[in-house]
Image 1 (spheres, helix red, strand yellow):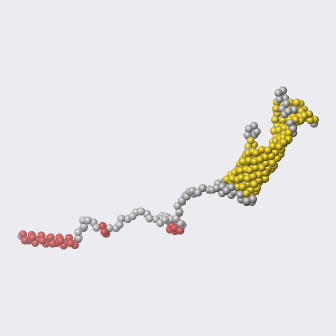
Image 2: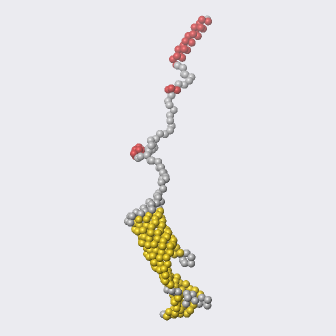
Length: 289
């Protein structure tokens, strides 16, 4: 009986081993060598194309160059004003601008005209002319309350010839120079009063006259500086020192009634020589042709 059981159990075990060998056994640890790679869900597109656009649009986009980035560059170089100073053959003209204040209204006048010709790059011939005429009317009240009218005139005419020598300057705006000139001087001052016998005292139908004239020459040196605003316009100043010889003539104080001369006193005629220093009483403004 026991042997039969043993025989039946052995047959069953043998049958079970055969069946198991045919079916195969599933491994406990999965084999990942045969598994597919995890897919990448990031979209990869070609530059310049739209994957959702039609094929022809993509073709046109592919033909166009890719947009370039905008680069903003700052120019660190400063813009420099180019100034060409006068050279041989250039011709300049200038005037002296004087500004008056005080009781007189604000006024700018040009009473000193100068012409300059560059014979060489650093040598200049110049001609200067001064024509200045002023008239002033004054009214005085003398001790008795009478009104005395006086007219004062001043006429100044100068003419000068000179030469300048310009120095080299590292500053492109500045042009310093020095030189010498000779000048002819003619100046006349006059006083004429109506209803007066001494310029202030009232006397009906009396007239008062006095004239002082100065004529002579001046010779001296000068030094100046031109500042060029650009290649054409400049401003400047100048100082002078020299010797003058003048003949002075004073007609004296003459008193008349109508055309009849009543008295004439104070006549004077003589020479005057002096050594002096002067400077431009205004700003020189010039233009280069």
